[in-house]
Length: 628
View 1 (cartoon, rainbow, N blue to C red):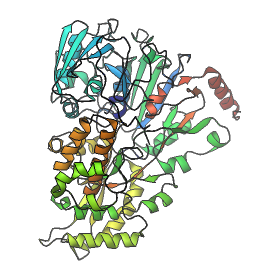
View 2: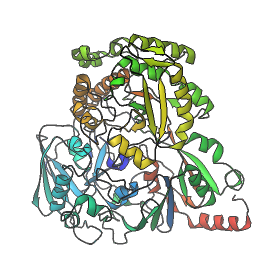
View 3: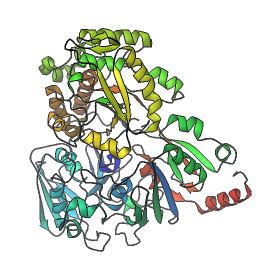
View 4: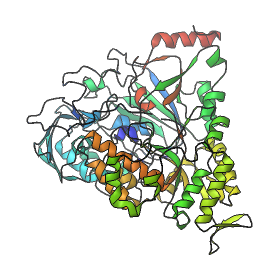
């Protein structure tokens, strides 16, 4: 499962530093129970019962008494070129997908995997688990006042099965057979086969108004027009510079428990910065209110000064979370012949000195990545368990022997960098490479040289020492920094050798794993199988994850997949962080209880402007005086 609100709608690109671990679900749990009769507002959970009863008043991490009003100004690095968060080639602000459009159901941020009716009023799963009936809320409206109908649901599903949107959605909903309107407010979704999470992820479908987007060109019309059913509407924007959204005073769902204590600002503006230094100085100057800090250097050294340390006008906080970290690293494009040999890939991984980087560049803030499901119970450890071996043995011929014989863990742990480089040189020699005139070459004279593509400037200080280590092996690498939009197009078109990327994971892996790792996705343009890994064992394990009948089966299959991906060395692991680093001007309040599984922009939705704090801050600034 990947909730679109968490994952975003496009590339999960090289976001610097930081994400952490889900609560362990029950070891054994049945798929979502069949519901004989729909119950209004009743949630679905993949494991056990939903946390919140149908009559719940608000989420535990919300403050239903939070006052409405005021403006929130956010800053972000990068740009945008469209208001379409769903098109293949467009790059839209995340807030458009989050706040303008809605899905049939919404995930609670304090449960590993549960969904509660949003645009839907109720879900009813058939006893044979092969269909689900969805009742829409008759009061649901798009921002132009038109009702949300079953026809809009069918139109939306069909749109997300076309080439107009990324292939992720086809993989995600591959087991949906049909979506049909029963009447104006009722939809029946039929499944191809029993799939334990399919009913829940069906509710992730964003609902688009057919009367707006069903008449012209989806990509072109959407590029300048965002009409949804969510709590905000687009007021104004300048491509690449800023976008302003205002709270819809006629938002149909404002009294639902899902939205109590949420969406408290009358206006939200997002400012875009191409230069990280300009963004930092803009925040300290007060050009925007909240700064989600992605750089350890900025957090430790640059986000300092009287406004923070003495006057207390700006607060710095570490927000705890239990997110599955996924995997951030230098991903290799296995479509390139130079990376076909797993020994070459392992050698490249050995040359990255995390310990040196953490000590000298990151101020000791990070932990070394060793998993594609980092910091979660889904992470593989040690040698394969009996359950893992049962899944892996049939594919022994397709896997490196280390999958069965070598413990998963820190590559080269305890070895000095010189020892790591010696081991890397032995691997390159075993793969047929010899250093000639300072360059590693194979028997045919092919040189081991490539580009390392990235977009975020802070990565330069990480990449340069890594490249120096690779040069000691005769591996010639050129740092290839691009603007974010160019970087994204390079990744989408597979026009890269090695790139800084993140594959985000959830607390409950499922159908999205097809898009991440399957052989079919490797050949599909714009999929999230960036490395192009094609392996029979990986394909089989992805299916085992999707069709797991219990949490225990899911964890075993995920451990096995993690182990295989690790020993295939499709990326050079980097690092992770178990908190969100957030700085904000001291005029806001937020609920005392944080969610468990969330990104900072989701927590911003539950904050509010504290008028007393805002007045105190204004007076302190006028007098150049500290806040108490």
